[in-house]
Length: 90
Image (cartoon, rainbow, N blue to C red; front, side):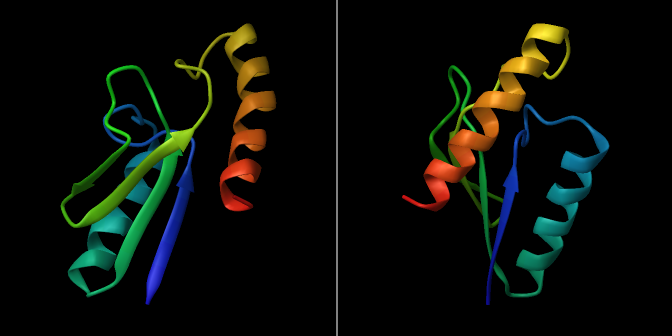
């Protein structure tokens, strides 16, 4: 079985409750023999692909570099859904 998580932020950039819970679930699934992949946003200096604790992390999405502030929120509302759509139909 394969599982794909799509998350705007992921370790080390995701520090909210949703990201922490998803990372814990991903690691638990790997321990149970599940092939886990994460599609998440890329940031300056981040590797485009890596495997951490058995979880395959693909950084190919676009979003704001910070989840706070009015302008960052507007950018996120526009760019993130478009990048998800582009990657999943690609």
